[in-house]
Image 1 (cartoon, helix red, strand yellow):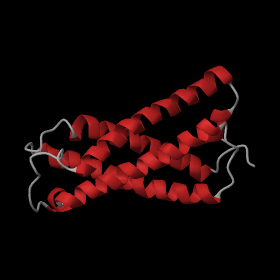
Image 2 (image 1 turned 180 degrees about the horizontal axis):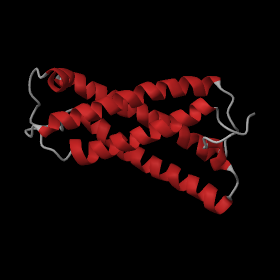
Image 3 (image 1 turned 180 degrees about the vertical axis):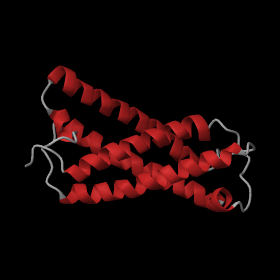
Image 4 (image 1 turned 45 degrees about the horizontal axis):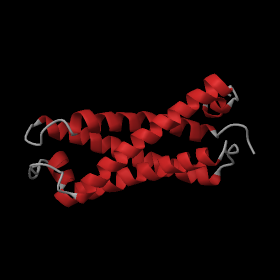
Length: 167
């Protein structure tokens, strides 16, 4: 087993992490906070949808590479569960976002100016799922970051070097 992750997995990890952070911040502070009656909502939704779509495509690519590549051994069962949980929650976020978008014709409204936004999205089951998954994802990302800091600062066991870009 290799001591480090393949460069493609490392690059995708950091790119996806950045996009997930942007998506969560944008969804929480821009999409959720701007009323649907505000014209600025369309721009916020467009950005959020583009970021979400990019995350989905990159996560699918990362999953395919991850399943085919030799990877370093897992630190422990909790680490393995957390990593697969991150994949699951990202896919739940993408699926619920797509479901919500299609249910109300959001692509036509946002990207083609056809139609108007509903008064709110809260009546949609997919919106509830999206919100719950977002909160769980935030919690799991925080746990992931805390574990990384613990490995780097307390255990100093080299686990962080496995995800570095330097060889």
